[in-house]
Image 1 (cartoon, rainbow, N blue to C red):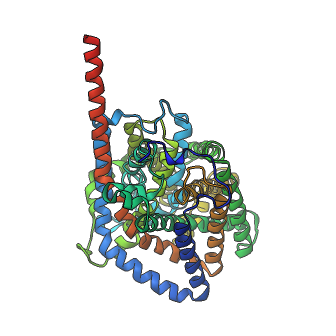
Image 2 (cartoon, rainbow, N blue to C red; image 1 turned 90 degrees about the vertical axis):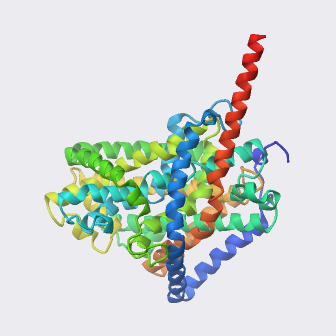
Length: 531
């Protein structure tokens, strides 16, 4: 095996260097999904519903254990001596800490946090999760419990699965051993060369790409619905398919151009703009909103989250080992399926932008820092909604009826001083947020099916447009199309969760080896100095 990274060559042109079997498998599956949605949404619904129920029932507990184990294994490797090892074969990082952190924060948070930050705390506030069934809903007492449940779904465990272990594996095998920067490399410790060439690799890459396409098309479609709703509310522009189509077309143009320009230009620039604008809006809300309530709620929510951490993470309710998931399936298991599906390709993106960073820095950013920032985001946006609702009942709850996520966000922003301007800026922020997910996922999908980490422009354009077209097709058949895609995300997570399993011991072995090499180098240095 060559020690020269496979991705170190020049950008290819056209379809040169594309893994054709992976391309055919992924495109073929996506086309079939869209055709079935157009032909018979009822048939698609029945197929997806059966798959969703089966996945949640038989894999829900495994996913809960996998996320918990991934989080704690990440903490273990961070404190080992090998945790100080620099990854990526670079002496210093390519990007500043702010640039690096911005691109990371815009992955999970952009993938859905902008939609759920306003809605999920409100949902748990109005209908307390089963674990906290003794708490009275719609009261001040319910606030920390609503936030604690939201923190579980968007906090430590969610972020850890996006790359704390898999990023370490991919950086080691790609930059140091010359293996492809693709999901198949995660199975190299088990299948060796069979994982890199042949059907095992094709199926692995295709499964992960399909999962990410499903996970990304959802936010693209939701953005069309969110912005269209906002434009109707703010400017009276009709909230219909033509407006939604124009919004999605504009979004596709933004993130495709960004993906074409690459990590160092468009992707990094959009992420930086996002973080700056998001930070300004959060500070504004914190100042003009219910400030003391937000701060108090953050710490009480965090305390509740920590005190019930394992109960939240391992809650099964009436499901037992393999029972009907019920509430669990539509909340925790759904989110775990979504994030697991993102796992391998998100790790590719983080591996690409983390060269020159230590194992410890990568784990701490993904498993501790990013989750805490996300929790604060949820508290400022969602907590403001809870404070407004407590002060004046039905201010937010009425708009949120039927889990109307766009309406919840608009109701919160419009209730603030300068509500019109804040609401408009949140629409802009949401658009850029989803664009950062679109450009990064367009890039890594193209990398995963190419023989270089600089895939051709044609491949990037194809995937950027393809995801937008898929979102439009699913929106055109009604809200049920996007809804079924969201349910389908859980089904796609089944094979991906198996692909992620080897990272539990694979990353540990790599860090232990780094520690041994570091110790040997220190002994040699000491011996030389003594001589």
